[in-house]
Length: 211
Ligand SMILES: N[C@@H](CCC(=O)N[C@@H](CS)C(=O)NCC(=O)O)C(=O)O
Image (cartoon, rainbow, N blue to C red):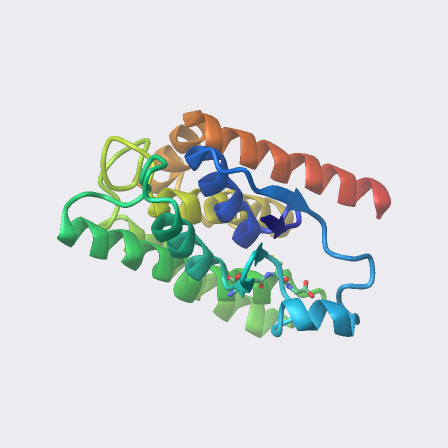
């Protein structure tokens, strides 16, 4: 099995954290150079996005779905779902929160041609999405319990991307010393989260070099 992944993608990063944490024999491969125009890539990823898991039975895209697939396919590996059924719902809720309320305004803000009014609106949406997290996070290092779950896989790379976005645009999106700020720092102490965020940093440095 392979995962088509890009180092800087927060969506791909969440799946890589899960793969490392579960110790799965899945190779990370880049998309083809012409992936944005490639018809062949569209056969693997109808949305034209990464990540894509190339399973023996066919491709699976959408990172939240891939996370749950790996969990169900490899239940014997360390589980990334909480044991308690309510907590499982909260884990899924956190993944959805990232997908619905953090990533869309962040992606919109990253567009080069965004006008000032839209940028202000997106930044407010983002701040709203961040502040909602305050009530959902339980631990300083892991989002829900004393170990890594799918919630951390999704949240930690998204908060790293948020930090990068805030720095680039000169916005205060995370209050220093807040619950989210502490979580963003401490979650990196998990070796799998730390490794993947380091890969994101390296990927960003490489993109900056290429221009
Ligand atoms: N909902 C998708 C989002 C994936 C996504 O947007 N990936 C970005 C990279 S972070 C992408 O491939 N964008 C297409 C592009 O850059 O042309 C998922 O969770 O997998």
